[in-house]
Length: 477
Image (cartoon, rainbow, N blue to C red):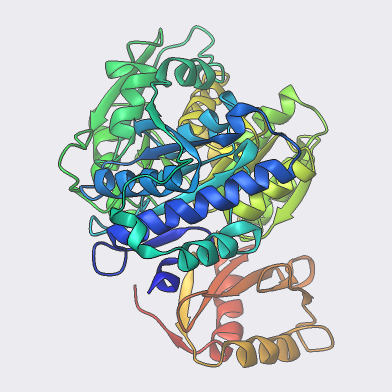
């Protein structure tokens, strides 16, 4: 059962059938054992290295799961600094601000209310994924005597204390914000998630903490653990309320956060949805103006315009595999100034190489205030190519399909597309044929995921006609 809730990048499942309270305790125990050992191996034995930061989101199951998690951590010997109900990015800040062994956030991010889970970070908020510690945590959790969940604390148990870090966290986030004396009116859809807590704590009620900022609030109530719409801003239908409000309020832009407020999607002043890759390109130029010549990391599914805009701004474009584990690692290795992912995660060198929805918001507002143009006009020249969006195909023979498409469309074929397999299969004949695509396998389902782009609509239609027959049955939206 335990193995069913461990995913590639985190732990997640429906509560309480797949993810149980007992598992919460086991995962706490396993996390503590791994994180404390990892901190010791890192060469630091200071008292703070026994501490693990814990936070939780607004789901009705989160208080109970956090309680069991904390007991598991302290039973193993770790001590807990309990931050209470916070956004996920607060965990990354707290781990670094307090110099702890790691942190655990109780959340299921954008999933429906019956889900919950855990996002785990180690020292310096470095990500814990399947190949970077999550497998060891699973083994530790599976091997512990499960009767301990209801037992009194053993000898040598750690302790737990509550701590409020909103003030230093707000100061950190607001260090990224400068409206340059301008006034901005924005609409924020908190998706009944943690942005409903985070935004007022940092930016003030209605933006009152920031001179010149006015915030119109949508779906800020997160006290019931229910969602007016699914807390996933990548689904266009979840943005309808925000888009309408931006136009009705004559706002400068809108921002929609996911459930744990570490991701966001921007809507321009006309209610148009801004692609996260296009926003990455726009923010890359903003950060490169401050740090000329630095690297910018981007999700390999992103528009060709992202690479082109980074080069134009004098930066070094670095393609990354999909997923926060890879983005954070590459940002640190390349000493990059900024990174952006198609999923709405944005990463910042000045934020310990981690992602932050709050800092993304601050950066977008700062960037917009530097220009005399509205968001739609800033994005228009970047959104110069035609994209398919992600299309899913059912396929039980994924590896065979990928091998076939390389043979049929890759080097030596009529299309003669360049091929790389950094993450899935990327076919690229953009310079010759005007199109490129990336095809990735789903980790959990018999699906292939296609993202394609071309210089114009006719070329995209031709490319899809070439590619789709090899991928299986197209899944309807």
